[in-house]
Length: 408
Image: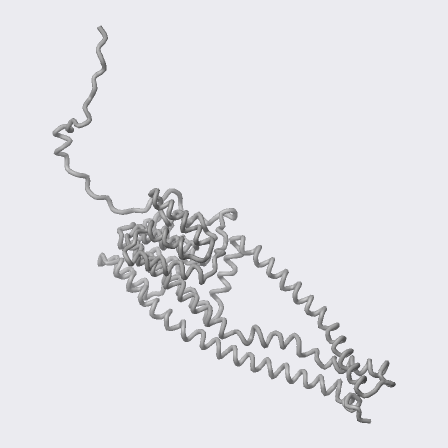
């Protein structure tokens, strides 16, 4: 006789042994590492440059941080940014990020898929904020960093404005001006003997300017072609890892500004490491999570080397960072003290505060120093141009001034 299948009720209590089992101990927070993050990126994996202007990103992250600090949820913040962000690419990014977050996705992981809108450093810091639970503080830090960078770039632009937009054009245009009189007198001697005084002067000026422009045009075309070739070569080089590495090496060797940009990047690293270690992230995973935060290939490779040493050689965080040859001895001593005392997050925060104070002070002194150097350079260049032009006038037009003025 066929028996119907037995139906088990859904609300049956578990066995007594299962009920009395102690709860599993909480696990230490770790970052999943699906693949080694310390390998050098392949050529086809190089992220493109961020296309969104710095000022637009600065405003976006300031609004983002303000909304989170005001108590809005992440999804509500992204929804609000869709309505107030003017930049089309950031507005569309906020819309898609909201969809990702509402479906349970990670904002940092989604940002890495939009390298044209968000830098690797911003994505790394957001990952640190999501992991540590300090997303509002981290986003405020991103906004402050972008504001500092915007202020510094504006100060440097102002300090070098005279050299770039006044002195350089003078060096190109002024030295050839004596040829105006030479060409004008040659035209006068050929065609102006039978003309009236006013017509002779018009002939000299017209033919002189024509000859000057005739000589200047090939020079301008040559300069334009050279600049176009250099620009194309530069853009192509920035699509390769060696090209970006060379750019970053040269940028860090520039006096005054090179050390300043380097210390800004190190400050970002220290801030992110402080958030991650405070959340209980293991040292190797914390170093791997900060990959690309500097936006500098040279520094990123050094930190990747430190992450490899911390994971593969099982070195302490301070020792791994010491072998990366990035931090100063004072910073390394703070990190080692934090490890020995169990206060690593506090020591990272203290080191970041030292760097922030130093960088903030130099953001004022460095542009002033560059401005003084630029002014002196412009003065020397102006004296050189004026002296060279005056000598050319004396040598070429002194004898023809009486003819130009109508004096025999």
